[in-house]
Image 1: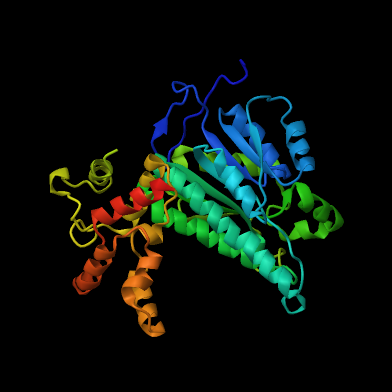
Image 2: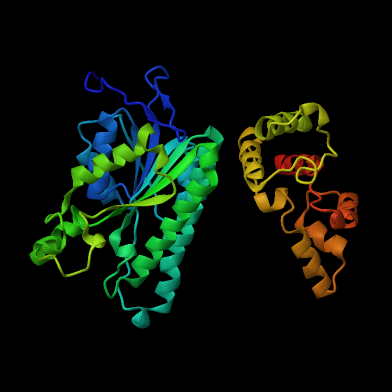
Length: 270
Length: 122
């Protein structure tokens, strides 16, 4: 396939570059929550850069969505069924025995409710799925990367983690917990070649955000940039974070919200 | 398969120590100064090389003292209580560790050998 002429040097956790043209095998990356729009935009860019994304889906509809989106790249990606809420699917995921060079984690469940109104069984299930299961997945992926002495762990979080709206308490709690897990991995393993970064995205023209922004156009006036980000921009940022130059960005949070969280809320005029 | 020989090579690589000094009786923490990250690397390496699932808490005898306290609290004989929780360790080794605990972390290379041999049988 002549399209894939330029295989980028890819991240190996220590800032060293490796030209994977010689090995003949494209570096594999696990994309959790691979059916969301951001993941799909990222996946095509990854393929064009010479990577081999492995995208997870929860139901056949999701798999269909991935295949439709990446129809131009047959044989250059793979899909796997994985659900944080299903422990067996974790075993299936790792039965594949892929060596992942990087992980980009978009997976997130939702439970919108005031904390004091929440269903107690759902509380247990929500944290089991979004925190405990994620920690177990992270453990397994990190161990594989540790063996190869290289790896990049990227968690796609949200500015809502730090500043939830009423009703987003569980979402924010799970996000913050996940952020800390990723940060700790980068803290603990960077000396052995495995680094991590958390990307807090603000308003993006993608998926559920797009519908929300269309319904609430005045929200954008709060953003210093005066617009939401494009999915492409977020994907390009992730590509940069996967590059060798970004190795120093380790165990830390990058906020990609156009400046929204930088200033006093509600006041954009001077 | 010479488990000890393979382990010696792994430890030389991971901890950058002289292989000549490593025997089955060598203490990993007390003598070689292994830290958590070293043990983690070792665990991952053992996992991959010997094709066994490694439970870090078990192979590195992490909860030995905790279980000892538990046994005492429950009024159970330490050796049988610990023997049930570390089934890969020979009974005489458990006795050895109990006598050795005061002096520091008791983990020896031979404990890793026992674990690998035990898990490989499964």
